[in-house]
Image (cartoon, rainbow, N blue to C red; front, side, top):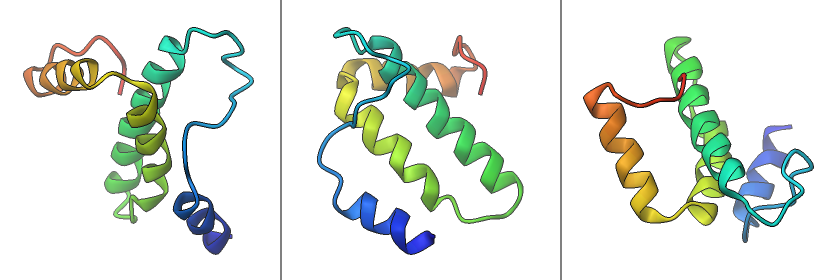
Length: 86
């Protein structure tokens, strides 16, 4: 199972189709993957587990989201003013 996930991550090129976001505008997809990455990291690190499965979400949001948005959200998380629930 872990080998299959690692193979998918290695062969990753761009964000795959996500049926939750069928429209051309991928803004929500970007934001959701950003939240999923941080939630995954928080959940796995609190259990003392390896966070490598979370890399998938990071790769997806980095391919979909503009860098300025990610920098803004990272700053908001540091300041404690991020609007999403992580």
